[in-house]
Structures are given as C-alpha cells and as structure tokens.
Amino acid sequence: MKKIIWIIAGIAIVGLVIFKLTSNKKTTESKVYQFDKEKPILVDVDTIQLKNINEEGVFTGTFEPNREVKISAETQGKINAVLVDVGSSVQQGQTLIQLDDSLLKLQLQTIEVQIEGLQDDVNRYTILAEADAVQGIQLEKAKLGLKSAKVQKATLQEQINKTTINAPFSGVVTAKLSEIGAFAAPGVPLLQITDISTLKFTVNVPESDLKLFQSNQNYSISAAIFPEIPLYGKLTMIGSKANMGNSFPIQFQVGNTKQTTIKSGMFGKVSLTKNKTKQGIIIPSSAIINSENQTQVYVIKNGKAILKTITISKNIGNKTIVSGGLNVGDIIVTNGFINLFDGANINVK
Image (cartoon, rainbow, N blue to C red; front, side, top):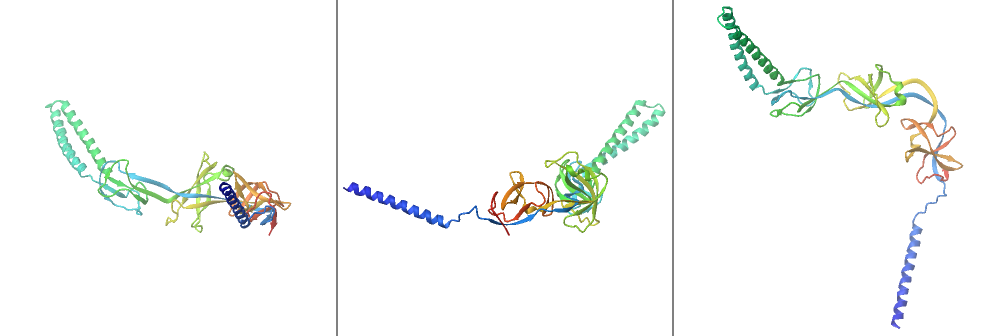
C-alpha cells in the first residue's frame, strides 16, 4: 500500500514540474519580442538620376624628407664633444661631433720628427754621393725612407681629420643617439639629420589613372593640415611595379616654404583637373553594403527590398560613382537598414 502511495506522489510531483515549466515558457514567450517578417520596414530611398561628374582626380599621399641620414664615425674613439642637439639646424660642413684625437696627434708629432731626420739624411747623402763619398744605393734608401714617412704622416693626418664629424648637408638634427664620453665606432649611428627644405611627395595611383601623369610636369599639391599654402611638385618618378593593391607609386619633388612649414609624415593630396564634365550615376556612400567581397545596395521592386550587386569606380567625399549594376529610375534604400533583409516588405518614409 505504501509503495502505491509513493508512486502516486512521484507522478504528482513530475506533473507539477511539467505544468510549471510549461507555464514559465508561455510567460517568457509572451514577453519576448517576435519579429514579424511580413511587417513593412520604414526606410529612406533615393531615385537614381544621371548627374554631372567633374573629372577632377584627387590622389592622397604622404610627404617625406628629401634627404635623411644617420651619421656614424669613420674611425673609432671616445666622444669628446657633441656640438648639436635634437632640433638644431645645421649647415653643410658644420662640425657636429669631435672625437678624442690626442693619441693620433702625438703619433703625428713622432712621424714629423722622423721626417725631419730623414730629410737631413737625404740632403747629406746627396752631397756625399755627388762627391762619390758614398754609394748611390744609400741615397736611394734614404729617399725611400723619407717617402714612406710622408705617407705615414698623410695617413695620420687623414685619421685626425676623421675625428671631426661634419654635416654632409644642411638640415635639422632629428635624433641624437650618443653623448659625450661614449665610444664611437664605424657603423654605429650617432646623429640623424633630416633635410625638409625640399620634400618628396608619394601617391599610389591605379593603373587606369597612370595616363593622367607625365614625367617632369608640375602638379598642384596641398598639405591636408595647411590647404591654404599652395605647393607645386615636379613629377620625378612613375613606379614600374604595382604594389599589393595593384596601384603604382608616383613621386613628386616639392619645395617647402621658407619656414619649412610642411613636415615629414604629413598627409597631402595632388589634384588633377581634366576640364571635362560627363554624366553618370552617383549615390550616397551610406547606401552601400559590403559583404562577402561584394558591393551591394537594396533596390526597391514591387514594394520589396532586393539586394543587387553593383560596380563602383571612385569615391568622392561621401558620394560614390557607380559604373555598373544600376540604371536610371532605380529606387535604392539610403537609410533604415535595421532589420532590413533581402525580400523584406518596404514602407517609404
């Protein structure tokens, strides 16, 4: 009898749990928002029309220094003096660093004494040789010894000259990599000098626009942060090999202002005006959807949003020029993409 009571009690408890779970599920479903795919979605649209396109090409790039070098010593030695600091303007030939040359100067004095003695020997042997008092070979040995000593003197003088490190060109010290008391050695950078009196300006151009550029021609260039400063660049190089983006580097030589206002690393642009106007399809860039390496827009047909793949040729600010996939009269969605999907019913604002 007790066993039957326990079985009935267990069944009652299981039934109560199932009832409670079912009740909770219905309560939860009633509170969760159920998206109605048939409900029209409110969107903004635009009708495609032909618009005038001014064929003005704008290509962005970066300014770089005309010359930049890290200076190292040609000989080793302790640094006795660093005569410039970061930000110092230097002129070509100006002394920048002085290495310890005291030992070399002592060696130079020694060889000068040797030269003096050898010169006396040559003079003495010359007189004696003329009087046949000595053999001619002794005079020749004295002359060779004098020549060798003079070569040693020239070598020491060159080593002393190399202890003075001068600026190879005019510019600004942009890095100081050593201090007084440090040991200099060939190949170890000590200073960096940058010349921005003239700049290099490089842009990357797609192959379809290479025909717009001609070598040795001048082009209008401006810095992004100083658009009011007119700059002109001479085209000095058209790249022969495309980069990863299938674009070609094009480089200009640009004269800086007297105050060297334009700095290395600044962004700028080169502008080309073809003086031609044509008509084409321009849409807001916000209407474009990029997915799975495809460029698409929503086109309205029979009250529904249909995804359509398009081809674009260029971006102009917040507008995009479309070269294929859209026709005049097509209606595209420009805003209201939340919950929008291919085939959704549309309600135009």
